Length: 457
Image (cartoon, rainbow, N blue to C red; front, top):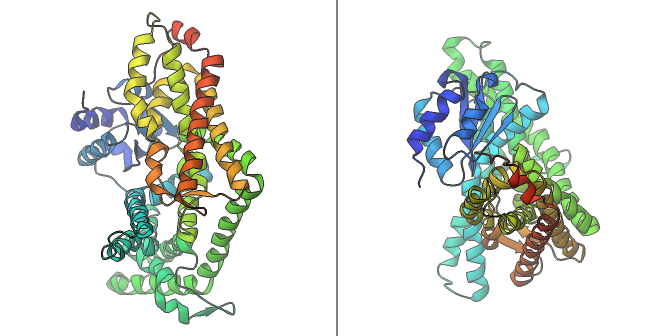
């Protein structure tokens, strides 16, 4: 039965402390993400019991309500109508690291729809070019697909200033320097700059500097001159800092990230894939996977694709294999047999398309041991993809967000689309098989279901 977005949003709001307790509202592909003034006001049990809520992730002053793809967009729109949001005030509670991760997610998560759309169009254009089809259309399609990535620094700068309490357009204006063609006439540290040098990391740092300068100007400049001097000083100081420091430093860091990612998979590929694929589900469960978005985006900006995402996507394959094993092992007459089977049938299509939260919170995590065996499947699939990276066959994704079967249109690599697709498909098959076998043999499914383990959401 379709979820009524208005009803769900109205039910969630009082359970998170009401409008006065909500300081910001965002969403990713599956989660309504709320920053809260007082997280102790959240009624966890009541939230999890709401129809349509698949799970709940709490992290200091952030509450993430798992609703699933599509639904979350509608509920977020309704939720925003019910509450007047304000920018977060002060540092995040619970330590600076988690606060930084939450803010980074706020910068990059809104960019994911454009990354997905442009990535799919770039892949389609590549197929048309290789096949020699529609030569009159492919230049236009290339322009449509590439324009966002060419200017992504501006969007990163805008979102950074917005997230950290500055004027968004000033953050975008300073970040735009990174991709402005005229920087080719500027020399810093004895080296002539290149447009795009530093990429998204440079844009992020430039907007942070602009926000810092702007905040120092506010209150120190007479009110009558504030509208003139503050923007001018912000752009001037942060702009010069970007040209004569940030672009050079961020360029070096971006190059190091690309070199490190390639070296990691080329040298220790099977082991690195084992570790990354095995640990990604816990990161998703905790909501920490969003911290990887700047790294993925940097690799896409620098190399055209991220080699890390296909490895991490294997975690979803292990989850699907584990869920199928649970379905097979369950007895119909177990206390939760019918309920879990229904949950698996409804969540499995999303899991095959790389949306793992419904299966995590509805099946494997409540049962306990199947969550660990799902991680084993992800580790096996990651090792498979990593092994071929050691042989020189790199598998990458031209955009972030999708995984599972949904990642096929976004695949790219250094050995042609056929080999790239075959390796990724082999990794998925390995993850499915190991996740299924480990869960079937060691998941303790019947015992857990017989005890009446409650399903999340």
